[in-house]
Amino acid sequence: GDAFAAGYLAGAVWGLPVEERLRLANLLGASVAASRGDHEGAPYREDLEVLLKATQTFMR
Image: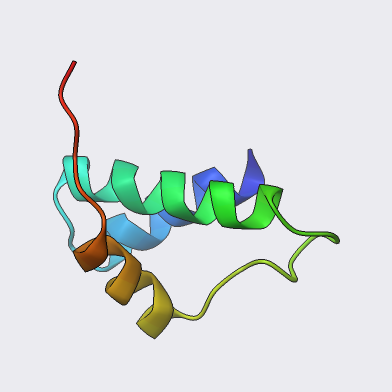
């Protein structure tokens, strides 16, 4: 939850639109949840930007 919130807020500070903020929040939350510890899975901003460009958005 904390990493998701941090991702969303970071996206807001960076001026991203809401959809991109949510994608960033999901990426950061998933990255941290998939690793041991409380911050070891948190990628650097440059890594997040690469991941955002490499992932697709699916509409249901």
